[in-house]
Image (cartoon, rainbow, N blue to C red):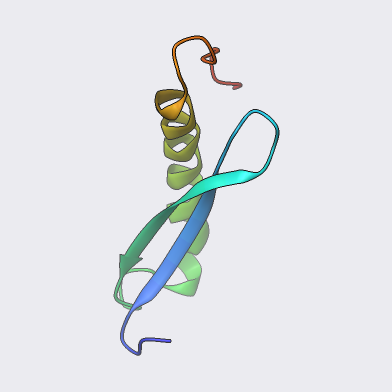
Length: 66
């Protein structure tokens, strides 16, 4: 644990379901407050899905689920 730092992470999943990587957002607790946690997660999840698509080989790519 690092004091003065808050980190939120969402998984970057592969087609079979396991997490291949994680997308993390890290800043101070004054920025990621309890009240704003969901705000950050709502924006991080689509980015993680986009990363999943970009990290696949062209043969594995499919349109992201909405």
